[in-house]
Image 1 (tube, rainbow, N blue to C red):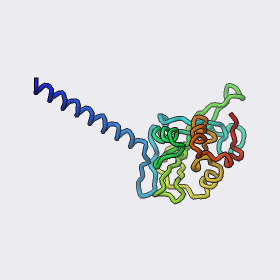
Image 2: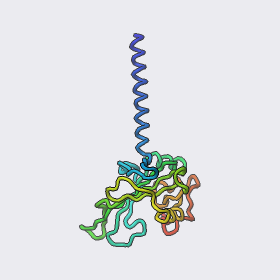
Image 3: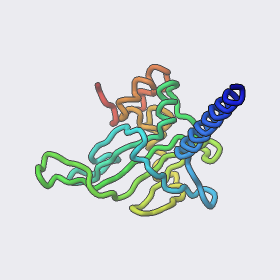
Image 4: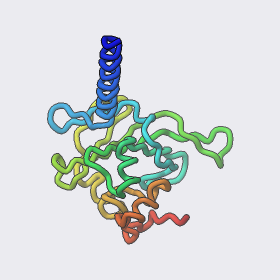
Length: 194
């Protein structure tokens, strides 16, 4: 009987250890991966992350077919934001750009082919302004940080929480306001009334 109890305890401890290791490897999947210093590797499986918002002509594009944009964030960052109103270090956003189609009905648009996607990474140790911005082509496996003139200015002038456009993320706006991190004065042309 004693050997059965010891065996059961050892099996239980082994299962607990395996589950902890599994959680650790899963969470690593949500961390930015770099090669050659600052070259970000293309995030994998980002469509399984938390979907924040989508829109047609986001990013100042003109009317017409344009591109359809969807925004995703890593699950740990999303839940951290809901609990604190702040983005943790290593937060990653993916802005997926797809062509849009209105073949069946000119009033309706839906996303079609992937054109490119952009990634925003919070890493205060790596980037002086806390955030790095990257643009990936259709099948580009890595990207170097964008020049500061490309994304930084708009995000820092109009992003309502830590250089991010929380005003466009309906599920997060209330958390930013609750914790006092939401800067309504930065909404500008992106003000959304709900």
